[in-house]
Length: 296
Image (cartoon, rainbow, N blue to C red; front, side, top):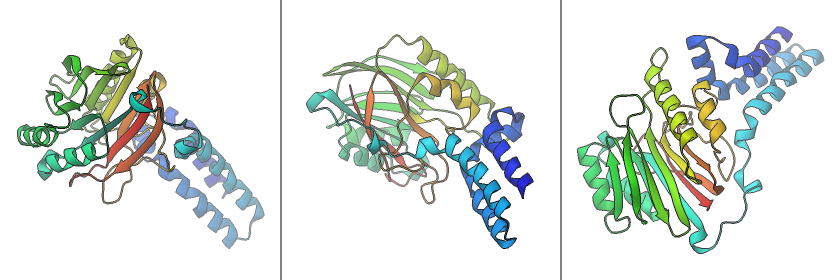
């Protein structure tokens, strides 16, 4: 029993030391490691072992240190939203082009009041559907490859980014808000699976370099990054930007929609203060959409 508690604690605190694919697998599922604690407690109760019960609390503390901070409600610490144009609402979703509901997704995101919308996994048809749904409300837009940015405010200095992949699955543009320019990245990182995540890792590394050298005072990164917050490939990017927790607390899981288990979709910022974040269903995508409000 003590050995099990020690092993679980070691995995939680030392997952960065795990090599290769074992490290990828553990870090992708690390949020679920906490489920080992009640199993240890049940084992201890069955054996009527006070020492075993005490030992089970050690990995519980480790889990709280590693995962717990991302579950704390943003509402506990977020300031009030700024009045008028001092705040900005952004929304993002992988629309799952094959579902044929990109227009529905776009309309749902527009209805949240988001002035800036980023969409991922666009093909020719879904790009047209989303564009039509947002034509009146978000007249400014820029698309590159499978991603698109739609805005109520003018878009400047827009450029496609391949992030080392060889074709565009990302973009950077400056949105000219009434409170000043904001550099916005819309990203759809390559898929990541056990034994097949090199392209994803390369894209996240290149994105980190882009953000690190970006001289904009206010930067947003939104999109399907195909990584969970505990993945080592996400660490460097996360060190440069801040990602808000959900306003209501709990894990910001977004995939799959039917039973969200993994937090693959992100909103991160620099030079801004997040005041709200929530996840919503939009269209028939297998990803929940992310909606965030921030002060500029």
